[in-house]
Image (cartoon, rainbow, N blue to C red; front, top):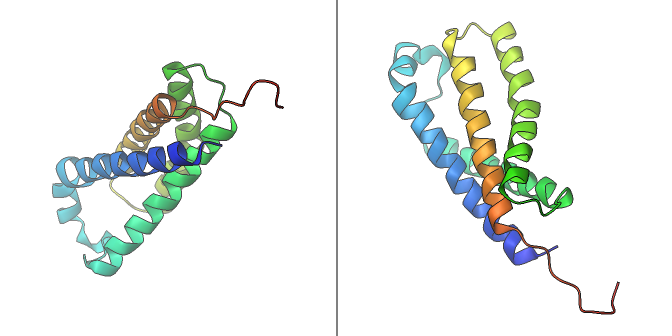
Length: 140
């Protein structure tokens, strides 16, 4: 594994995920969240720290899984990976959210759409950045 590229792409993917999350939760859903404050935690450093820890864990695992299945097929491999991982994570999660919680109906759909967009963009970033370490000639 190319450790330098793994760390680099994990951090970039994490930053991109956070940008998408901010756009989704502040710009798209911010006013709706304000109307339904009973579902929200109040902001603070402890909440932000947990979001950062969760984002880093997600990004490093996301990139690790990409590397383990790396086939060197370019951007299309990243798109495919993002769609598969996004559907694997977000589709069942949002069905569970909708089934078990009384959130406004559009929230789980919007969360799914932006989650899928994020994983596809993350997969593309992985495909663009990751290159395995080439082995010297004559070694296995």
